[in-house]
Image (cartoon, rainbow, N blue to C red; front, side):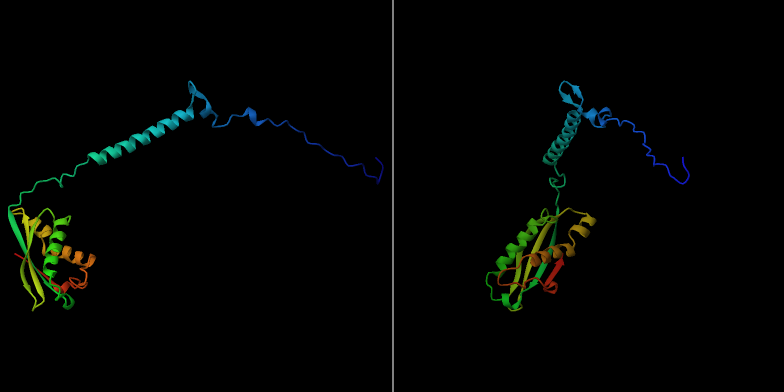
Amino acid sequence: STCGLSSPPRIWAREMKPVKKAANKESPWSSCNKNVVGRCKLWMIVTSIFLGFIIVIIVGLCLAGVTYVDEDENEILELSSNKTFLVTLKIPEECVAEEDLPHLLTERLTDVYSTSPSLSRYFTSVEIMDFSGENATVTYHLQFGVPSDDENFMKYMMSEELVLGILLQDFHDQNIPGCENLGLDPASLLLNGK
């Protein structure tokens, strides 16, 4: 080497190791493609078992729904006494001239209590007790058959609040044509239990 002169740059080459091809390494899912029984692969068997469980659950739920019997619905009650309510309804001025109103209200009360989920099993009848065009009131006699000597039943199922609440809800849900305000004011309904 001479003074002051630099030597030509040397290029250092790294050793190149041969890269192994990915073909030698197995995929983690390759075991699912192996034949297990005949031409069936593992993934086919796992999927079949999973679908089988789903089908069994669906069929079981359908059969349970079809064969379920509600014991309370078919229970035969011994209704040995009667509970009577008197319902007095004030008729709004626009409805007083309606001649067929008492008959419409009788049908309405019969429908309300005979289709009520909580009281239909006990409802027996409704009758007009008094209709006064002068006072613009109509009074109905509601009769329910009830089990005897059951204080909790009378306290909760045949309470005046429940019987009146069902009627008020019906008046709020459906109006009588030409008499839209009938029964909408809670003060226009009076209920007395006997």
